[in-house]
Image (cartoon, rainbow, N blue to C red; front, side, top):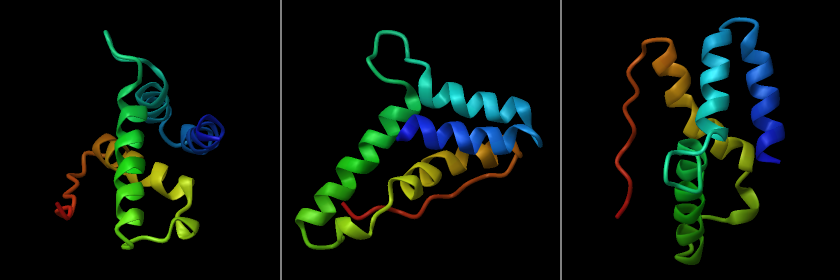
Length: 94
């Protein structure tokens, strides 16, 4: 599911910015040296574990979370960085 969504997203982006599209694909799919995951998949895993913790605390309803939205959330800074736009993330609850 993740690969399919990233493929569609980067295919749509490729017409406007092929380098950025390829960079996002690589960020999601190319494993880091000496690690089992790519940087993007590692980030996705962190976000999903965070969401799961929030659900256990009753702060989030998992049925209302769409995986595609989480992927866009983690990829958006990469897209904006490619457009030379600084991204400021809101502080997370501890």
